[in-house]
Image (cartoon, rainbow over all chains, first blue to last red; front, top):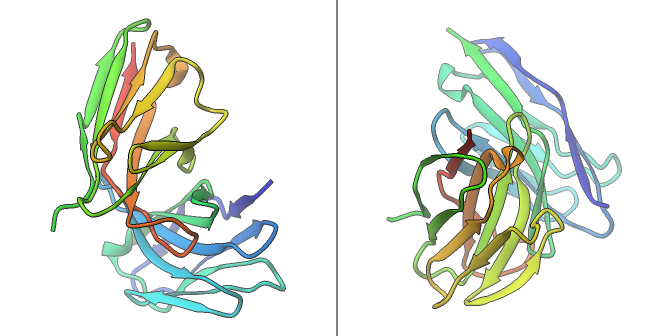
Length: 110
Length: 115
């Protein structure tokens, strides 16, 4: 069945470092791909999405490109801030269900 | 702008008791979803509604679980005869329609702890 695999955390970086969180998926057909973020004490929020191959989603300085050939949707940010500390979930969306990865906790040190 | 609202935020109960959670979706959204999130895991789909119709249930939803959306607005999730393994965060989400392009808007969740 469909599944999402993302790099395990926690990931700890210094402020202004470059961030990559790897995500790969297994799915039949052409799902939409999402990144959700969960800040401490808050609910899940949509960060960005891509609905077809080669689409690039972007928001708040984060980017991810839907790579069909490598079945990947890696999350990147050029310069992270302390406020980016959160748990990030890669997800695929098909047939009205979202299948989430396990989440990657990100700590940004000042 | 009111988002998805869940009540209560936290519930602590003894094993064997029944619990009920409520979710109020964004008002114009006709789709409503329930997920369960255990520690260190991503949310897992439980069930969803279109208006008042329950369209799909996951195998995770044992017969001790029941969800309703009687008037197509708010929804309740009831767990009967709770067990230790039911301890989790229960998340509700809503969307204006179906399909894989529609992002779901999540509430803050109800954290259930079984003593």
